[in-house]
Image (cartoon, rainbow, N blue to C red; front, side, top):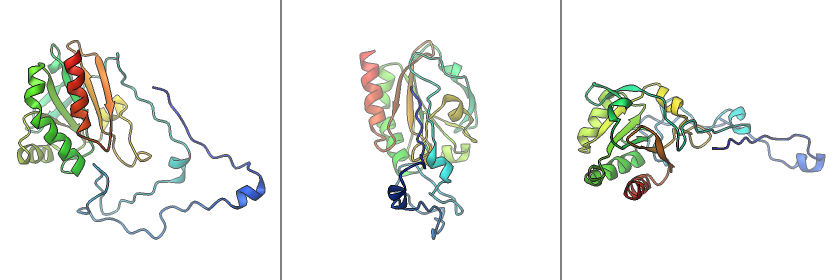
Length: 214
């Protein structure tokens, strides 16, 4: 996937530059409480969090997906919702859908997880496992899985180490963890990469469509 960057050139003609509005960040903004609902599907904010980002983050940002179709992703071993160590290699020999989602119990992530749940028998029909990965701890994953009766594996990537190694791109200049799904074949090779932050249920449609045509 090609990378891109955005930069600001200050060598504009004086009359145009003089009319350019001044960019002001983090001014007169109050912190959001931890329980405050977000308009974004997957964004949780701590009491000291603010949405605005440093100017440097807005001026230049490159997004490069490290794991692409046809590649073999980095291996990992993470704890599931029951505290067991699960490795990517455990799924060799069958297709596996690995989806990275922002956080438990956010509106979009709940919709996505429940859509995977409701279509789980269809995935089983294609012989595919489903694995969800987020930065939440195992206790959060267990409560999330129990509350929504999720029949598939959830893995805790605290610190987002695996997310970074796989190169999952963020949204909103990195303020929102990316929502990206990968389909790996029986040999562990990536055959589909799908990214859609604000239509979480589309991930299920696209992966099932791919598995059906594979």
